Length: 263
Length: 277
Image (tube, rainbow over all chains, first blue to last red; front, side, top):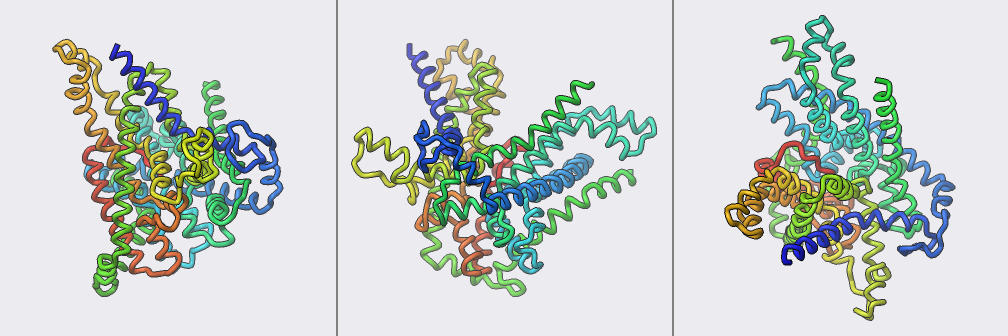
């Protein structure tokens, strides 16, 4: 009896915690389809008006597009650098390797505000404050640990015999990489790239410090409108913020499926 | 051999330069400036120790981070235990649900909490409709609101390491304990709990590290009275441009993060992915 009571209690507790965790997602979607600016379980004035206003606002669309561009640039930068780092660190001895890894992963550990403050000072000296390039660089930096960890763990699970066979059959290292390693790495690469895109697209603190009035990213503009104005467009924008990384991932998954179907 | 190490160096050249130029050097420079580079002076640190305002902010930061971590453990451990005993299919769904909020923007999650916790928010309306209270309860612009939102974002950082260590326990250990006459409680206390101690410690340290550096949540849900160290750094950089002082604050935050992270690395499994907040 007490055993069943314990099981039931545990299940209720666990489900309640999980419900608490996903509460923000449950709440934001109905809010975005409601013309009334409060949360109601069933929207009292259901409409697409928020989305209509959003897509008729050149101001928000400019910022949205800028954020997509920044995230795409940061994604490409951090994926390339991350793959180089993953290939390089795995060739090192264990001590040198943990040293390099610690260095490359540290942007993930240091609080964003500390990174932002130190970058702000140096960027001010270099005249990079308010530049798109500055934001892309810093976003690529904080996305790098994700790429490194994902690509490294995939590389470690690849059988090295293939690469050795390729080399012994006379392929140059670069040829081996493109023809043998790369195809096996593809899924991890896609995952890493999507994650990097998401990290950049969602990043607030660094962008808040480093962007200028003309280079605001979507989160910075969201921040401004949350802190300084009451804009009922927010739920719609928030729902889009969830959707866009999903739109980035969808073609990747489709490509993956198609290439699997071909082989 | 020589050619191979040349290749390794070539592979690592760009990543190293990138991280050095845009991360290491600015950070070291900031620490240097906090000590009055090019001279050496600890003036800004004296300022920091002497001022009662900053002591209050430090204590508040520690307090909020501690309360958050303990709450996350209380919510996260039983949940991980529950999830670990689910059928594999249901477990995969539960893990997906727990990871789902990471897809949602940090700003949006805080914004949702703002709309729910405000005086006219859903929680206060519910409390008043059910007759628990006549006046709306103050749920935000105070420590309570900050803690609720922080806990909401940090519980997964406890659940995942604990779940990993729970799943690593061989099931026959529990059978062995039962067959030796251990009841459920003693099996939990003497088998499960010790074997998940490192996972739990890792989760707690990770939660505490991230909580110390929180900036967005205190700014949005705390209001001006609930400043944490990060808010103070941002204020000194963006509003008053007091660099040595901002950097001395940043150095203390950096120092405590590094120490805690070394402790975390000593207990944690490798390669845990943290999302910066």
